Amino acid sequence: MPFLFVLRFLCCLRVLCVNLFFVSIAENISAIRERISSAAHRAGRNPDSVALMAVSKTRPAEDIRAAYEAGQRLFGENRVQEFAAKSGALRDLSAAEFHLIGHLQSNKSAKAAELFHAVDSLDSLKLAERLNAAAQSLNVRLSVLIEINIGGEAAKTGLAPDAAELIDLLSAAPRLSSLDFRGLMTVPPFTDDPEGARPYFRTLRELRDRLAIQFPALTLRELSMGMSHDFEVAIEEGSTCVRVGTAIFGARSYA
Ligand SMILES: *Cc1c(COP(=O)(O)O)cnc(C)c1O
Image (cartoon, rainbow, N blue to C red; front, side):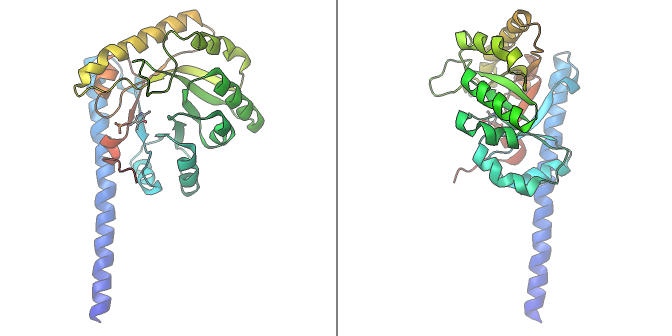
């Protein structure tokens, strides 16, 4: 009898913990939405013009489900393998949209085209060719953003803002007919003060504006920029998609 009682008590405790944990992801999302809205209003923008992407890398499928139940639909993942392992448990989240936001090796293009709705980290013409072929053979369309290494950092991926390959890539877009080129993405150099990112965000927007004029047949509308610590500054500088991980799911631990 005491054993059963203890068991029942532990079960209640578990339900309580799970609820608390779900509530906190939901609460974080709603707090971030408020802050997105305020930043957009400050900048004279419509809050609906800024998408919130929940970056779920390193987080288990249950966290993604909790965010989905709180109304979140757009998710970002960094690695093909990691998402391949989680995606089976998430098949029933039919309205969820998953984007790859981490560096993709071209030999994983087929798997990426199968798993993701979009690749927001396209960084070479070779990768674009491979992704296009993969999307074509799956008979799907894949949205892409070109990743720009805006701070010219050696440790970061992405094309340099003045790379000839950037122009080659956009010139090739019309024949890469299974890819939709939608805009640019960047991760600026980290500074403790989020204001430090502002000039990089502005430079990315100016680059997008120039490219949109140079390639009027493409609709280069998207600017994916801003993360947990600097998304408000990014919105003030024109971001159309902020990628927020830790401020929604908590600190990541890399095992
Ligand atoms: C991890 C990651 C994010 C989210 O970063 P947070 O600081 O946790 O919000 C956004 N974009 C990319 C490309 C990332 O790798």
